[in-house]
Amino acid sequence: MSRFWQRRTTWPAWLAVVAWLMPTMRATADERALQPEKQPIIHDLRTDFEGTMHGRLIDLEGRPVIEETLELIRENETITQAVSDSNGRFRFASVSTGVYQIQWKSSVVVCRVWSATAAPPVAKNKLVLLDAPPLVRGQRPAREIFHNPLFIGLFVAAAIAIPVAVHQSRKDQPPSS
Image 1 (cartoon, rainbow, N blue to C red):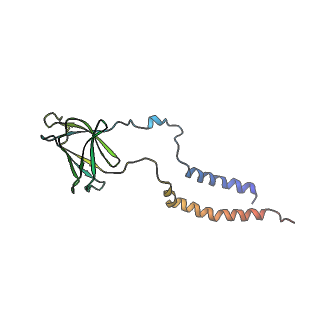
Image 2 (cartoon, helix red, strand yellow):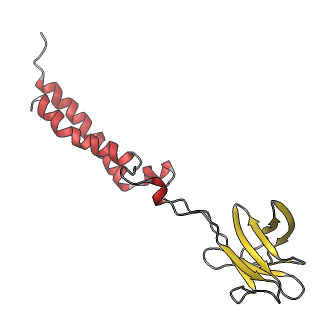
């Protein structure tokens, strides 16, 4: 087989491998149009008559998260802290009305706190928080590529095809004298 045909038949394979390894790009889409507005979800929460906020912290399977420290923050200042108990329950005592952030680990939830008498009908008596890792769309660690069966198959195919192609290319050359 001539070198011209060898190169002509292998370039689509190399192009496919390079395209597979490169990150995807949005060629025609406007980036701003694809991203939703980043406004936090505000949870309306009603305190009890003593001004105590109640809540529960659970994981993705619905099990309680035990002994997790939660901070109640208002205007970038920590007001108080609470630790979840064996059922994942926590409470913040003597909370006045207003907008707060509840922070734990790397998670933050925004709450609008109402008194028991002034709360709107949509306000909840207790807040259920989900302790889950943040979701990042379209990003995976690079080490996951090496566990991909397609990558392993391509690596094995290349390990076989490259030496064969080199050997075949040496057959096409006239012997040197």
